[in-house]
Length: 325
Ligand SMILES: NC(=O)c1ccc[n+]([C@@H]2O[C@H](COP(=O)([O-])OP(=O)(O)OC[C@H]3O[C@@H](n4cnc5c(N)ncnc54)[C@H](OP(=O)(O)O)[C@@H]3O)[C@@H](O)[C@H]2O)c1
Image 1 (cartoon, rainbow, N blue to C red):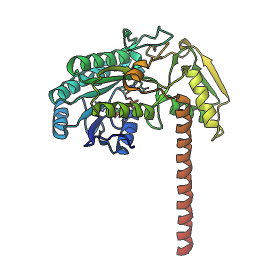
Image 2 (cartoon, rainbow, N blue to C red):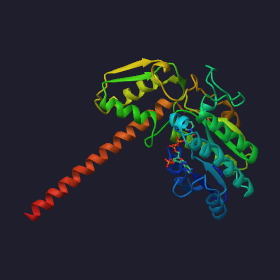
Image 3 (cartoon, rainbow, N blue to C red):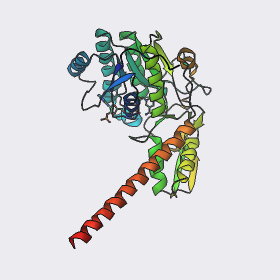
Image 4 (spheres, rainbow, N blue to C red):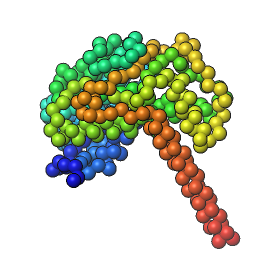
């Protein structure tokens, strides 16, 4: 027997739709007959602009809003705190307020950086946040606004996001590995890499259950399965990429956080415990290693098909030249 389907597809408005998670979520929703995706990039909907927010949400009246917008640059946040708080906190407050006024549940993404990283075994949803820097503090304040202003919310804290677009550790490591013979990687910071597509899978699973009547609001954690360090993640990235390409790098050097000075202090442990999500929604963690393999294969397939297209175009040009001659 096929699974029960809801009568009408749910309409999901996605803010920050051009970011890593925004893109992955849009792609998944667009393939799912249970949903209609309403993606909004920053250029289409700037969440810091209240009038624009009010008008678009009132016009669209989506069934749910998923806020994938954010100021996510951890070091720049220390230099531009006004920007970080404006987007991650103040704008989230007005988004939550507008959603509440229009009775639209809000799904909001937050971060492992709300914690100080002292619990090596990991953090559950009940642990007390104690952000170390501006980025983490701005995300924590954003969460608090959501809790206060729109009780029908899901706050999903995620960690170490990687994807095939935007700025992320995977793409930066690949870029370095192609041009540098020696790469330094921090080995005293532990966490769980998580693919943006895997987060999108989790959001879709939550949305389906909410649309089917689940009354389970609150804060949840999600990350890929298996704890590693930045060094361990780099090792895995290089091993996966070497299946497809000879890289320039021949030395991966483990270093401590102190040896790689950064503007913002980062939590030593970013590990998120994900039991509540499993117990509430039955959603299991996926191993980040298989997500990484899949993504790397996809990246190289894309390069190969671009090269093949280039060869066809060049061959086509040649034909034209030959004909003209
Ligand atoms: N990346 C991570 O490792 C990580 C870890 C934990 C939690 N998260 C959280 O997950 C969420 C999504 O992360 P992500 O990695 O997908 O981020 P991302 O790739 O940086 O995407 C964020 C998107 O938000 C847009 N944006 C910025 N300011 C905006 C505004 N005022 N109005 C509308 N859109 C705006 C950005 O546009 P521009 O590019 O034009 O600025 C970008 O397209 C964020 O809440 C983030 O804090 C991310």
